[in-house]
Image (cartoon, rainbow over all chains, first blue to last red; front, side, top):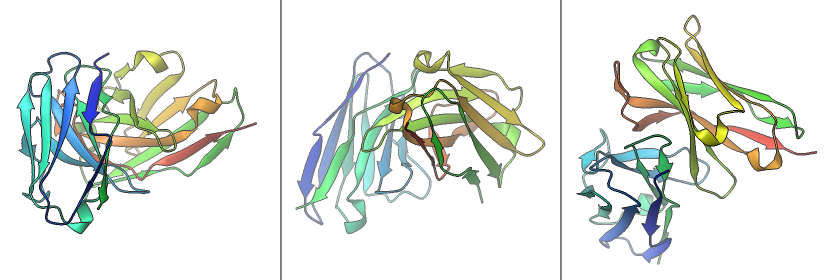
Length: 107
Length: 123
């Protein structure tokens, strides 16, 4: 199985900050990498697919980049509603696997 | 609008089985593959398997291969997940999820999620 490792595991930031979360795959996955946001008590929400494509309806302050084994999710200017847990997920091969999550908290 | 409505919470004893259903609406049911993912309390996400609602073919994660069965009923636009030989480690929220891409091939991207069904396994 492909292992996905996110860093950091948690992050404190302020409204307006620029934030970057990284995700590393245990083998090359081309650009088969997706990002999700999960708020307490809710199902995850797709933000970015295929490493850099913005899902319909997602604000443009979210962006993704990377290929091969190293990927990043960037939030250009944090808004109050962005404080949540973020997960990366590889869709290169089954079983699809997720990173352990990055908890983004208010500083 | 696309909706996935799952069945209600379940409490089961170790060794029992559980069936979670997921009724789809707002799109052509047979055009999109469906996945199942679970999340233990306070933990991360774990992919369990995928079903083609058109032909019924399935792929399971090896971890669940012997205990999980995914089925679909095209007459009611419902997919279901059966999990047998339950143990305490199976206590989790179970989600059905529509694949983002229509057609003969799935993408592995999860765009619409059900509300989740909490399965608790306890003696």
